[in-house]
Image 1: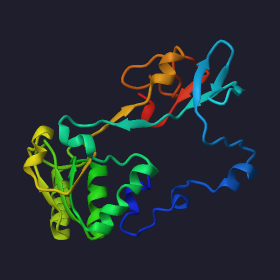
Image 2 (image 1 turned 90 degrees about the horizontal axis):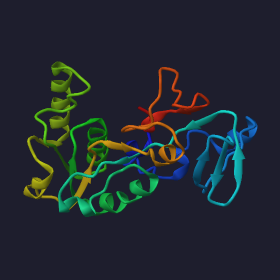
Image 3 (image 1 turned 60 degrees about the vertical axis):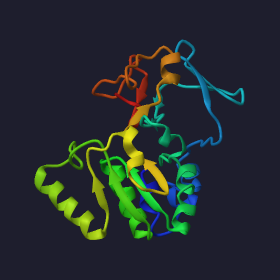
Image 4 (image 1 turned 90 degrees about the vertical axis):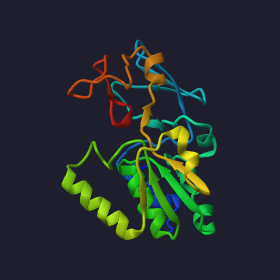
Length: 221
């Protein structure tokens, strides 16, 4: 996912460009790679996971890297909006680039800005909008934010502040994209008896409530 919104302007949305390692790397490093499958359940007592094809995998240590889903803003306008979390999501952007449409990106964070810059470079008219009163408030100081604002203006990307999600229709657009936070995927861990809150709870060693099970990435808290 880390590369998805960085390749629009270069028209490199080939799945091979998103791989962190080629398939042969796993074989060379004695890693068994299973794709197209889903873990249905975790059995802590038996140290097993059950796959949707019926296969049972035994483990001594288990790492949960389940990722997260996008948080959809309130408002009926977002029912048909796009959030870019997967390769399939990215492919939805291709026809937009080809049509040269007017895009509003709802969100004032890092991914929203990266996506805006890529779509602008691809030739689209882009507006960033959000309910806050500044960009990247959780990331940078005022001086850096001012520099980013200046660069966005130079690129022709307009920014609208104080826009509530239910009022997004006040802005003209052909396509709506949103980047407004994530919801960690915790259902598998919770059903397996692992402690969760908003995410899968871990300590400073990334151990969950079971010392032999770890969590990492967007799913971990």
